[in-house]
Image (cartoon, rainbow, N blue to C red; front, side, top):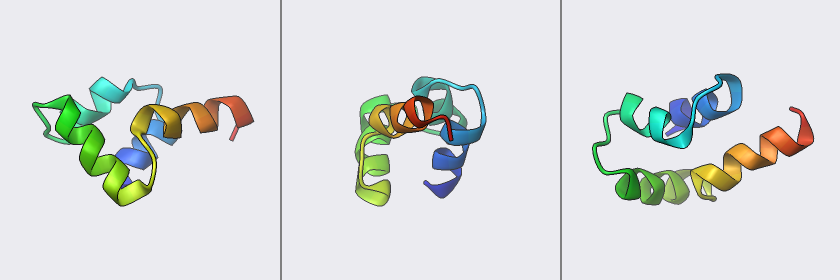
Length: 54
């Protein structure tokens, strides 16, 4: 999930694209696993970096 978080931060990829790249066929499952490991849903995680400009 650290790699998924990095892809969301550093690459211009959507949550769906990252989920599929990480091998998930079910994006709902990807979201649940990401939230469990990272502490927030992937879309919120991605938005936090876009709004702060990091």
